[in-house]
Image (cartoon, rainbow, N blue to C red):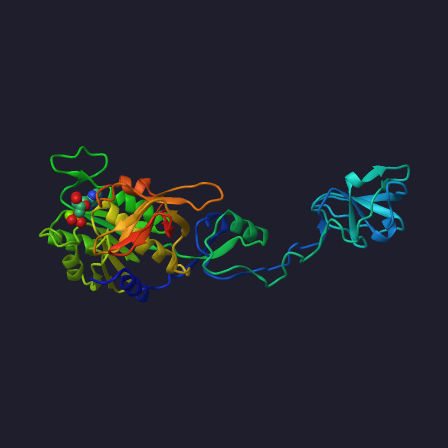
Length: 402
Ligand code: AMP
Ligand code: MG
């Protein structure tokens, strides 16, 4: 058996980087940028007004106050999208709206609230400083500045800057293609009534959801009974769809009806590791063939899920140019969290949050690998080394569950 860190090292050594594709920006939420995005133009693209008011020349209003306002003649208007095209005159101003072009020859904006209408036009009652309420060309960024890095996961705020910069098409990493195969003669589908001794196949739907949460796309989804020949055939059929990742669940332990390892080898895969010193998820199997990575997850739903979270979720990010990392937060153990066993434990915890304090984490009561409620109740998990007791009050790092 190897350690968790050894397993992670072996996986990282066998990774590839996905190729990229160009897609419409509209379809890019949730995708990952495949190249740095450099500003094709400055922002703002032109100097414009930050307020509704009047574009003025500061020299004409310097020293203005409520007692001695500056009187300016309004000679035109600059509306958002409809710039003023005339020339400035002595002691004049231009009515201007937020976002409208600051006309040539003007340097300052006076807010409507700081003016009054006068006989000749407007009376400006305050003069703060030259350039006030002007958004200057390039003040946010200049052409060529890097706005987003390769590996950026695109969410609404990133789409906003890409759209503003005119990136109608963006280069993103291709979604990882995943084939799912669950094995077990006891499995029925969710909608069927289970017969004697049968259980519902929850893993296939759970893994499909986990894959899509991690940014992948399921290209093949199959189920095989506990039969070596049928399992070999099922693996070969899924491999024909050229998945980046072949994700199997069940049949990877030491029972007489666990055929996945042997079937994978018969189907041409080379074993990288089998079995990790950890709980849950000891029998995790990892192999490869050509460009396809094969993961044989244990069938117990909690083990399958925890293996996915610890080994697959970061992998999906890593093959899309992102660092291999976990999202975690610091908490304190609300009470003792112990692992008296000989394998490191991924202990699922729930947290109580109090403003201004570190969250208080408590191990979920029932941690059995078959008890799906343990992952439903958990906010995250803590890696507790073998034969280790974490005393109440100790700070701990909780890896979040999505
Ligand atoms: P195995 O890894 O095949 O030995 O299975 C371990 C346990 O997980 C057994 O109790 C199985 O019935 C259960 N199991 C296997 N596959 C699934 C599945 N697809 N959905 C839910 N439970 C499963
Ligand atoms: Mg089985």
